[in-house]
Amino acid sequence: EVQLVESGGGLVQPGGSLRLSCAASGFTFSNYVMSWVRQAPGKGLEWVSVINTGGDSTTYSASVKGRFTISRDNAKNTLYLQMNSLKPEDTAVYHCVKYWGSSMNSGRDNRYWGQGTQVTVSS
Image 1: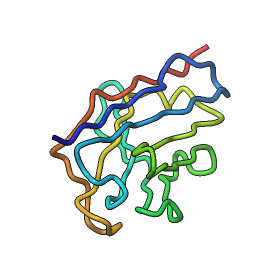
Image 2: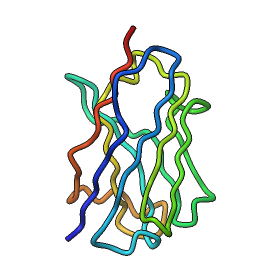
Image 3: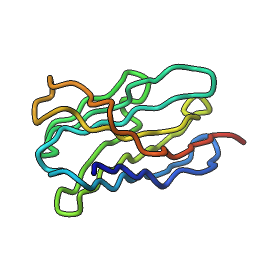
Image 4: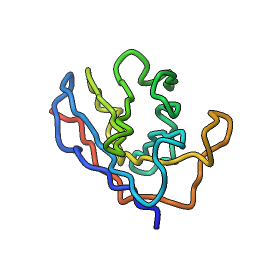
């Protein structure tokens, strides 16, 4: 059974930092592209970042580029999101999502969702 368990969220002041983690199980993590998406209160899902299987190719949305860094540890089956210079508009529930395969073009597999981790940026 595929499981994705996000952690690391919390309340932080503007300009602060957080590191999110996503522990994956039930599939061969190293064979899949992984991504982070977020959902702010009252809004739809927003794609944040994606990383290839080897961890050496990443892409970011314009809203987080230069502030967030996605990474993965295939030995630990864990995906990370380092978030710096946080802004109030980053407030959202953050989810990690696996793709359908090893290609960056394989698309997001929406069958499996964790509970997400809440990030609140406020003074």
